[in-house]
Image (cartoon, rainbow over all chains, first blue to last red):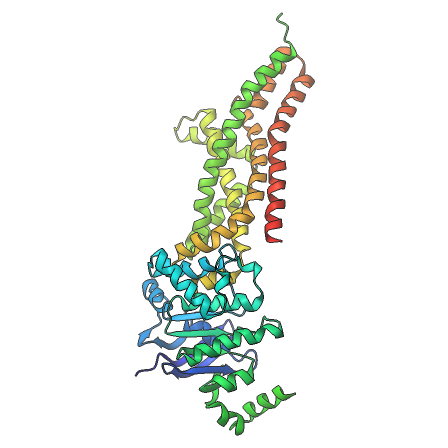
Length: 245
Length: 217
């Protein structure tokens, strides 16, 4: 099977600052990728480029062999249906109930019928362990619950790949576990995942491949055990040792 | 000489107040529609549209309403368009109201967190769907109190239409004064009527603000 995501020679600057300096990365179907690195290494920007929230300056991103092209709105809409995104700050729609948060995009974009949409939303809520929250408003939920709803909302579009941008960073420590368990289950169900994370232990446990980004490039990557056991570059060694302190 | 009772004065003022209310409503509704169109133009990615809307808003916010009324009344006549005081007042007040309302509303839209746009976009919603289903419902909540509050400004603004000869509350006050020679009584009555119109609206705006704040904690 061809890769789901192909990234080649990706460059991106914000004004004078070069954030991405030639990123190359392929993601196979069903693969779980954890992207680690210091803040400012371009991890989040890379994710945001993959679902078109950020324009890149040069290079190419292909999702299932289709190139991201910001100037073609219809193509972008097509593409975004393949790529789900979960944000650090949840970004649930506060004026809609949990159920309607999940049903909105399938109804508008996929023209899903109301009955079907509700069945799907309830099934997804059950999958993230929140079946009783269908009618709750988002501000009545804890951070961990909100993030699980956000995961269900992204899954409702049946994406081919799910991007997770530091999805536990805004959570109280005791709520991190419930979100990670949901992600872990997705991974074992065969979902293709790309996650930027500071939960190194978690990344090590579920990732098929660890990507270490440094100064806007993929500095080192490989299976987690290998990278942890013998990091080849001094930057990764430094990064890993800084985590243990 | 005819004697005017207080009731005569009040009755005539109240009759004229209908025009104040009418002009206010038309300016508010017309200004709301134009203001909404300006808002949408400002939210689209088109840079040209942004500049045009910006210019429009600066123009109407940066000049006195009185001058706008003069320009609408005398200016259009220069181009051979005969305007009645009524048309000129409606035009000027609509333009003035639209500039302010679109500015108020733009602020409300801007106060919706950027993450809401991004979440909507990442779910493959089109620009129109993002606005209609995600952004505007949230902005609306924030917009209602200042919008209702601005209605008070519009009502008071209609008093200026008296200078181009439009007979509303203030103009009627002047005319009655000329006939009765009781300026204080007349203008006190005029002020009272304005107050009776505006105060309930202010109260409503404040009550709305409180309930909406409570809803958002």
